[in-house]
Image (cartoon, rainbow, N blue to C red):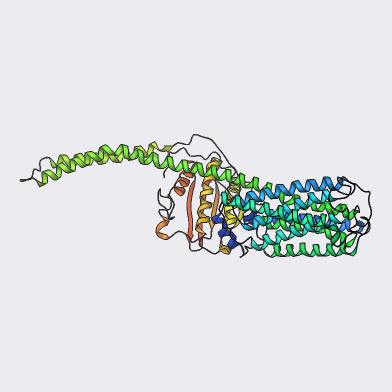
Length: 563
């Protein structure tokens, strides 16, 4: 039997350790309920942590390999800085634009702080290129040649790490702006402030470079002690931001910001251990690490945005289909009943009035009462026949052929609800037998049934503590003609008086429910010759059982859509 356990992401890998749900995710969950889903509030899952750990190991291994050769002098490639840092500038500005877009959806000061950090990084990277000797001019286009680029480098990494620190300390605070014009105003103020700081500080390190301490004495090959001191200070500054993020880490964004800072660290570490003299192995490698670090968050933002869009599109499609199904079922049944029953009900009313009139007359006229009561009974029978015919009108005989792998459909349904499971901090376990025969049911309809059961389970567990929320999907083959699926939750359960009516149309225990989800689900399964049962329900949770016929066991019995 295949088993897997996860919170949110779908995985078939066997795992034995239970999922730990951090208590610190409570503010995040509340925030998720109030704002749309963006990467800034998506919890980091085991899958994300594993990928990040792999990337971190690769970075550390690269540093260990490069460090012994960091002091080796290589040839001077003047095009290296313009090409690399122009690319870095473009990457950072695109990242800042995406973060501003996230802020426009969910206005939080932390997102503004982080976006400003990437604007600082992109701006100073470009300005250092202009000031770098040999980049666009032998002595640089701005500054004094050797020292201005070094000071811009210090400003670059100081402001970037400072912005991440500000993000880490403010990311749990709720913004007061709402999506729209107030958010646009916040973005405009942030951009203006960043450019003002960049312009002012750049003017100081270019026009007033002679009044500042010097990093190089004479040329780029002779560094003053200030160079190593600056690298030590910057490494401590970056490490501080990294440690704060580690203790406050909850989201995917936090996780990859930590990796970005880790990728920036060799920029200072290699220079301290080896040499910060320009055009050495360590110098070239350190700047490549910075570019890698800048690209990380951009790649994650793009990938997660695509995933969010995909989940949103799937959710909208399923929601639209469910809304149409509910609307058609209710409208068809109620409209038909109202139209067809009007005539016999009117006749019953007329006959009842006639009978009452005769009984109230003096003397009473009883000779026609028997005929009138007979007419009333006939009209009642006619109404019953109409109800039966309306029910038959809303039935469907299964003529379509279709088969599906129950486990694949279950995995897909869980994947579609991955975000809801993450937000509600629900630990999900799958126990699949594997190698099951295909079931004789349309895959989309089985998916609808499972989505309904999963959503009901999520709703049932909202009132219990997060660490006790567990959802389990199990499959088995009875060895004869049916594949069995069990959906088990740890919710509050269904009361004893409601269990007999749980599959009745229009019966619901939810304040905003329509009472059609389980009724339609039961109908869909019965239409194919299967069965949906509430196997168990108590204060420890509920278990729903699906018995699905395998190929060749399909039923052609007409079943009412509305139950």
